[in-house]
Image 1 (cartoon, rainbow, N blue to C red):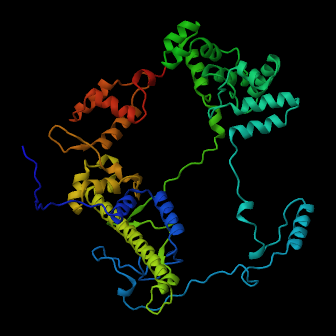
Image 2: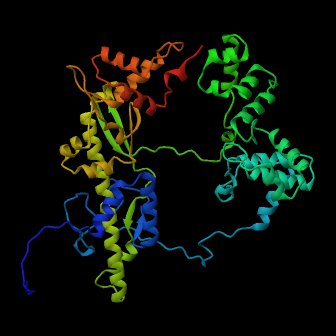
Image 3: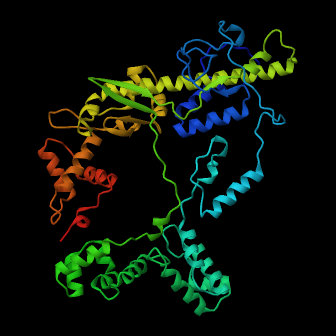
Length: 497
């Protein structure tokens, strides 16, 4: 077969992922917190971007006065903008100017501070704006487990060697308060005698919270029972010798093993369940993460109103200072103009992408509201089955776009705060009736278990039979899967005496 060169003409279609398109897709799937961080980062690296102080009536929602609100228009440069009143220039603060910053009278400050301390605290007189306390003066940190134990260790009358050993033990406690090293390692790392290591470990185990410093769950519970004066009680015997029966809630087995009546065994189990298996969590320094809704749905009369939550997001605008550099009468070098033009184009694409993101979220929530109106009226029991394809076909977008929009986005509604993904769930068929959403089935399953007899809890097969009587076809393994997703224990662990 001979080799030859040949020219061919081929026509094909390809999707080119431009940097602007990649940025728009990335912004679409960001959460609210990630979006705020991205905007802040762009403002740091792009000098053309500025944060607007407000949004006057009729101004663009993002605070930009360079972009139209319509999504179908192309990218426009500064020379194509319609004439409008000259906005106020951004003034620069001269740090060397004596009038730019007020002189700080350190002597007066120290005199006032000394006077406040002599009165036993800060004075109660009102301060003006210049004398207001700094934000850093009122910040407080939640005490961690280590800092709480270290504070107690510092109050103890111990030698310097014992203090060193105590700090090593405290530093080797996990978040639950359990000791992660063996006594031999304590002796080897600190160079202390075994008696000193044992004494300091006993001291740590006497500290607050009760149960801290234990090596396992059994010892943790025993330390708490000892703190309550129940070291010789039936509850301590159960924890010491019959923890496996306690895990399975085998009350008859506990009564037989301890030689007590079932009522006494149940009372001891009630005492044990009141203990804390993770005492260190009481002093966790992990800050809670609060959900800030991206969208609000309010009911006004018989209609629902959708409001996008822009609070906390910087309102972007184009700097007037850099815009003037691109004027025809500007004397700036061409290299400077090219740099500013590039940054201006990047800033305009960012603002346009944020606007497109907000419009897309609004359209998706509007479609969800149309499909799930009964849910917003009556609650989870009226949630309808819905998939991404339903919303995608309704608003004319691709399913992948709907998936990105509904990821890590939350809506505040009359029924509570829900992630947008919550409204998309599988379908459960019924015998002759309308199909039900899986979340609605979970809610009904939870209600069935809450109203069961705790002495004879329903098994998964019995719960499936209850759904069958309601003309809902649900297999036993499906009941078990939904029960585990709800965090509900199996029937043998839900049994009460």
